Length: 360
Ligand SMILES: Cc1ncc(COP(=O)(O)O)c(C=O)c1O
Image (cartoon, rainbow, N blue to C red; front, side, top):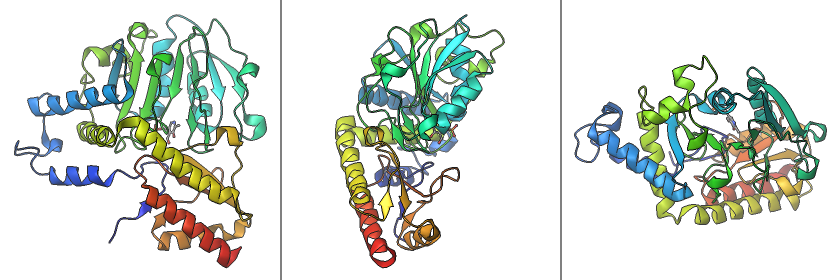
């Protein structure tokens, strides 16, 4: 069967070249006589894989030397707790911006550890906007300020890094990480689950400024302590070795494709095509304010919700899968991460036009 175009929000498509390379190396990684899955994480083979992956990620993002890069487990959801546990540093308050379901989850978890000041919320707009920076009620004594640069479910994305002064800025980059260049030095902590733009699920990358490490809340479990993971090179326990290896292949693929600048340009072109198809039709609509539309997750609504099931079924049959919107919002959502080829977006746009002609 030919490969389908998978618009899932995650786990999502992987670059075909990466899958082919992993297939070719499955039984015998570069003459080692074993699969990466079978390697000791402390053996010289896996250490070389791990080090190369970190070096490539650092190069792609130009990560400054005073930042640690951690390859962890537990998903972004685990970071919802690890961030307050590590960053409160004796303070009692943290700022959060609420732009949707994922910020909301981060807020709920942080409330277990500190007073959360929701400095701005887009709830009133049903999470279709980002509150203007001038309206944010930031607390200058907050230990950190957390936000979600891209809301995977709602399809809302910040296109600029907010200026929050001296307060450490923390970002849940799960669904926008590596989609374009970004200035790591503006952040205190960046975290992202792998299953959208990096590789298979099970791996979480955390980039943390080193002066913030080592002041965890009393009672913090070792596995939740950035210091323990830093001191052990992300090998305090057995790391997700195969996911780490796959992420390394993805970093290499990105580098060979021209890095994040080239990837960002392709992603912009893909998103522009899809939004143009939606905006130029009377049948499809996107509810998000144009200033903050996501380049990665594009929700759209059909003029007649009774056609939703037919749309999904026919799209499926055409090899365009996982287009149903998240169960909490309905409608459709096309996730077009790095590995979604431009031809996949072209095929979706053509299908949408044809569907509208037949059913609109
Ligand atoms: C923005 C965002 N944050 C957090 C999560 C949760 O990630 P995980 O399932 O890796 O814990 C997701 C998952 O889709 C997400 O999109």
